[in-house]
Each structure stands twice: as structure tokens, then as C-alpha cells.
Length: 414
Image 1 (cartoon, rainbow, N blue to C red):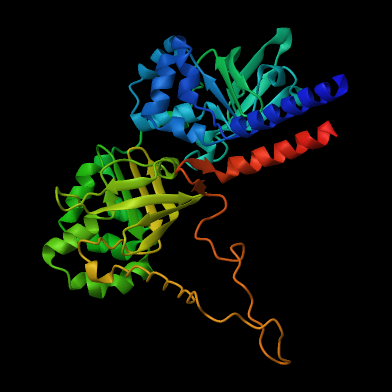
Image 2 (image 1 turned 180 degrees about the vertical axis):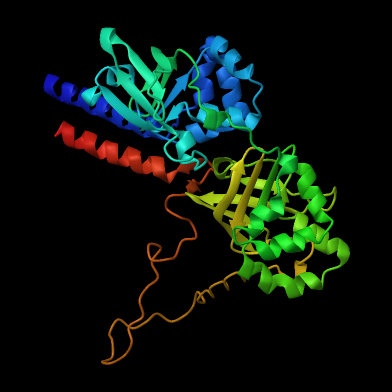
């Protein structure tokens, strides 16, 4: 009896452990929340949000963030850099590997070269986006840019560690980088159509440049702008329809390809749903749905579904992406909205007094198979949520986990 109780307790512990593992693996880290517990890093945390680096950090695993305190951030802000240069500088402090306190003091051969988020953006020429980590005498660890032989900052302490997901460590000061701090053109100075033309969207860019809509794009570039640019072959094939639109319709069509806010790719993936466009005007919704399936992001207008195929520019506050179809708003292309699929015809029931089939079969005659509920098609995906007879919702995915763990528990009780 005692042995069975022990086995039962062990089985229960195993079930709880499995459930905890499922829950914990579904929970991603949040750099902003982690740093909120440490007010001495509030300025650093604020600029992670302002520069939109926070969502980029949150969507990655196996990462290290080298934070500095408010005093060190004041030294950076005193340089009066643009928000784009601050973003580049802070991205130099995000290492694309896990370095906890223990690993820092056990570096093979005493030195390690770490790639940073700045290097991953492609904005860092050569190897200027790499950081050298050196294990020094007396239990000290130094950080310096690869292009420099100097030790620019020292390891201070571990702030938060979630092995081997995210490590937040404090270093003594900002890593100085002339490349990261270099001035970048302001949004008002950006040649948006020039960027599009140089990267496969020349037809759309020329059409936009010849329209009054280009002013709307340029004005919104200062406060935030996301552009979805149809590739040349796609927009060229669409031109006959474009030319048949009214003057107002042409402007709305072009403005429909822009959002009045900045969206990085990670923001598009995490902020699914209906979004307004530059063409939205009161009752004229001119909106579409942003939806992602893993790494694939689509834009759904009810007339067409376009897929984002590449990134031309992603420098806050402006992002430009290529798409594989022209976005057709339903306000202009109602006639092209696909008709809903017809509902399946209901099955005819057999009369109650229909004669029963003979039990014997004639040779060569077809044998009808009886309908079985198990064989009937279901409109539901097994992984989707279902409802019981009382309308309560339950998740099949969790039912599967509980069933599996209950089975394991039963085996342990044998």
C-alpha cells in the first residue's frame, strides 16, 4: 500500500513537472519587464522602447543585453545623437549569444568574439559590429570593440539570468563607436522613391512620384511610416486597372500601401489584426488585416492576400517592405471580392418506413457501407479549441498533454 502511495505521489509530481514545462516553454522573456525591477537602468530601458529594440530582443532566444546605469546613459545623451544613432549604439550592446556571469569567467583561451544586433542589421560596415570579451586577472572581465585594441568597459555584475535564454549584465559604460554614432539622414531628407526604385520597385515608385500621394508619404516619414511596395512585374501588370481609376481613386490606391506608423518586422508579426492606412478617412475605412504564420507575414484586404517578400529599409521611424501583389482595397474593387463558398447541401434522410436491405448479397452487387460518425468529415482542426454540450470551451492541445501525462502516471502505478 505504501509503495502504491509513493508511486502515486511520484506520478503526480511528474504530471505537474510536465505541465510546468509546457507553460514555461510557451512564455517568452520581456526585457522591459525584467529591467523594470531595476530603476538604476530606467533610462536604458526607456530607450530600448523608444528605439523599438525591445521587441527585437524579445523575439530572440540565446541573447545577452549589456546594460549601463542612468549615469552612463547621461554621457551618451549628452552627445545629442539622433534617435537612429542611439538605436545603433544600443544595438551594439545586445550580444547574439548567452553570457552569464559564470560563462564570462570561463571563456576558452581567455577571449571571445561576440556578434551584436548592430552587426545583424547589416548597417555595420565590415566587422565593426563585433565585441571582444576578455577574461582578465583578478576576476575582471573587459569589453571592447573588435576594431579597437582597448578595453572600453568592464563587467560590473549580473542583473538577471534565465539560462540559456537571456542574460542581462551590467557593464561600466557605453561602448564607444564612431560607426554606430555616425549621423544618419533625417526622415524628411530620405529619398523614399529612390530607395524603392533601386531595389525592384521602380514602377510603383515612379507612379507614386507622379502623384500627389507622394507628399503624404513624405510628411508621415517624420512621425512614423511603413510602406508596402509591390515589385516591378506585379505593379506593371496592374497598371491598366490603375489607369482606369478616378483621380481620387488613384491617390487612395497608392496611399493604401502606406501605414502612418513605423512597424519593424517583429512588430508586424506580434501585432496581428486590422490596421488603418494612409488612405483611411472617416467612413472610408481603407484598412486591411496583418496576419503572420510563423515567419511569413501577409496583408489581407478581402480582395487579395499579399505576402511580404523582403525588407528594403528598416530604420525607425521608416520601414519599407516588398510585397508580391498589389493591395486592392475593397472600397475600390468590390466586384473582385471572391464570393463565399456555397454551403454543402443537406443530406436527405431515408423515410422511416423504407424497406430494410436483405441480409444476403447477390454475387457481383455493390455493397453499401454504413455511415459512421467516426468516418464523417469534421470542419474543426484537432488542434483548435472545441466546445462541449454546455458551450464551455476546452483546448484540445491541453487535453492531449493531460491525456499523455495521465497515461504515464498510470504506467508508474503498475
